[in-house]
Length: 264
Image (cartoon, rainbow, N blue to C red):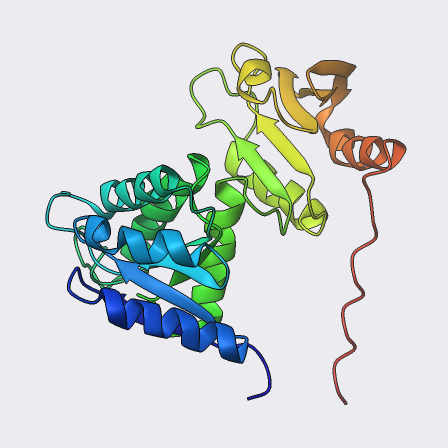
């Protein structure tokens, strides 16, 4: 057939010959096999996998295994099995009803479940691609996946904003300021902007940001590039424009795409 297909199948310890047959099938036709093998069943299939090598193989799980209280542990065991076997094959992290801890159908719960399964593994360096199968709407599922990848630092697809939780030292309305700056800079893919309410904890919390907007005194803002404060005590009314000018100065600014004209 035209194009490359990925066949997905679960294999048990008793299916060594079947696994070998599927590997041969996908290789003869130029496709790939996503093999779901529980870590408990891995030892019985090691000879087939060792002989086959990693070409055209992907490994995945869609449920928690019986020995793990959560899917993160199951994926870590799978990763260790592959490492021990010397198989440098991709791992597909699947967020499914079977990997969920609570199984709550709300969108917030889907976001949280995906964040701590995929996010934890990606931060460990585990996982080559992910899918959010708990969300039926493909557009929302894709957006959720991109958000998880962005949060884990695995794939940057938009501006990243870091803001402090606010406290009694905050020198401006953190929520409205963040929303305002985001509206002006949210199109800057790959740029990380920190918005911090004060200079007490702000510089430390935003240490890995590209640019920082920090409350320096009542009505005054300090601007940072990386860890360095480059402009002090700017009137807050001027700070947004000065931040954009600073981004331009460092070659990180691009103009936003024009808004299409409304049909008449």
